[in-house]
Length: 87
Length: 452
Image (cartoon, rainbow over all chains, first blue to last red; front, side, top):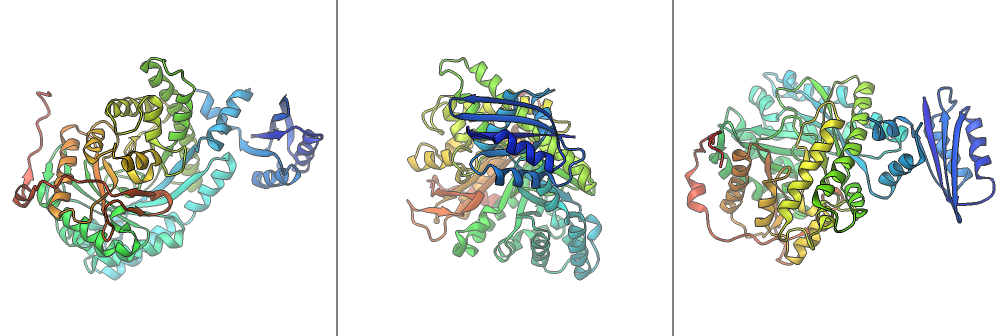
């Protein structure tokens, strides 16, 4: 089971570090990270393995939002993207 | 591997364009709740709804969190109450009260099925139940009612049409302290679908399984946003293509949620209703899609053609995305629930006559239309008959949900709040249909060949 974390907002130091620390705390293995910075605008997509997660997915989202309060964060199960964009 | 563009597209749809699952509706059969004693029947109804529906809201919320997609409504539809009432008797309003109580206990926001199917005639209990609708809807909060008065196979029951004009008016009068909201919870159908998940017309048809999950998707904002990226001189075929692709994506999400809800609840998955259901929120309007296609205002010339294209493309895109499609499936045009429609009605561009034409090519019918206080019962009946005739002849579902604005002056507006929205009083043609309506009887079923 995998989930997708997206983080969008103004670029600043340490976003990736904060997000990956929270993932580690939740026992989620980071599989892949893509990020782009356009001027000050930062967008990161992170694919994580949630099969041995030690908390609810919702809790991970809450923790991430606490650590990056100014960013827009979504944590969504990967199935929604697969079903929407693949036949 | 997922690519960033697809991921960002999904997130934009949800965050910016108001994409959501409009409703997960659990259909529950009450046929096994019938008894020769009303008290026993009522207890059985309450117990069954609580037993089947206790995890519905919780499951919906879990899915919302897992996929990050809002599921706006969790609802229940039940077997038309007239069937249980015919067997168990007593005071019909008691059935409405128990449905209301069960809905509140389970945590859903509407329960549909205070209904009667009388398209060919009345069976025992039908008239009594229909006559109790005004009281039932004014003494309950969550109960929705519907009456099927016609079908392509059986024609239109004009006796029922006559009665429903009076019932709609009385329901509005009895809830005039609450913006006449009773009438907003009452739908008169022709060709009512048995698996519709949308309120106020949802009921659990007698041909359905004991318990089933139906899902209604929504996303007018997403379609509008996709169309806004097209150049203004792009040919209309391209418009249809864009709508189809968008509808496919929206419906796939509905399918995912429906299947997951059905697995979690241990209840079979019924259908997806391929719909574009607007809300009064800015950016969630079907009228704005029509305007994006190229109309100055919804309701002006070109509206019927644009709506026909939209409705057809939504179905074509959605059908492939889902294993089972049903319900009302198509674009909804409820006036008070759609910001673009509200504006067009205020300007006087959108009229009841134009809406009637629009219902010939889209889902449902004259929906959420505020009509003047002095509209006669016979006129309401005649509006129902016209709308039912469109449904009957074209083999499609049509419905009437009009709200007589009791105590409201012309130029003022009714405001229901929430998803039901608000809207101005619309003009109704005053020419009298009294003699025709008073005839009663039944309009024979139409011929199905020699189509012209």
